[in-house]
Amino acid sequence: MHPMLSIAVKAARRASNIINRAASNVDLIHVTSKGPADYVSEVDKASEAAIIETLSSSYPSHAFIGEESGNQGDSEYVWIIDPLDGTTNFLHGLPHYAISIALKHRGILTQAVIYDPNRNELFTATRGAGAFLNDRRIRVSRCTKISDSLIGTGFPFREFSSVNRYLAIFHETMKKCAGLRRPGAASLDLAYVASGRYDAFFESGLGIWDIAAGALLIQEAGGICTDWDGEDNFLEKGQIICGNPKVFSQMLNIIRNHPE
Image (tube, rainbow, N blue to C red):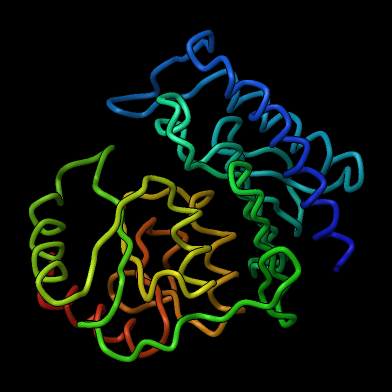
């Protein structure tokens, strides 16, 4: 395992200890609202602090983009952190959430960790070295037809100006695929595309911390990630469509049927 990836795994495991301790007393957790249906808890903040402390103790000159703490530092190495993706699930006791950590070097994603503390599933990738689940190599699915495919999505929840477009895409996808799922943690959705559990995934209105690690996992597992225009700007736009190459292209056609 790459040394930087090892430190990121260590950071994710430290954060998971904080999250697991808090999960048994969810009703005691202090929660504030960042906006409509957008919550942050003291657990998110403690998890992020533990991750940044672990990474910066090994790499004091590196910069950070954290969902809760924002941008810190200036470096050609930038860690992108979602300390608790799926906060709403977590606060309701729904055991589906994850920690996501990615590293960008000179603008290119190079390391990725997504850790699911409920299932003890550790997804990792280093650019050029493949993607793994608990040390076992993973690949995107071999499904070739959208009619046989299981597709993940995320409903709009922060910003509803494009909800009609989303619903039109959702409606066409629902009719054409074998199943559509929305569990509520985008990082895990992307990890599931990388490991072949989903054949494709689409969502918009996401933060860079939601998708950075998952995108590298998918690319290293043989899949494709783009924005909804089929371009490379998914991190900047906060919209993503990804999947194995065959189902990805069929999903992109559906999205193109419903332009803005």
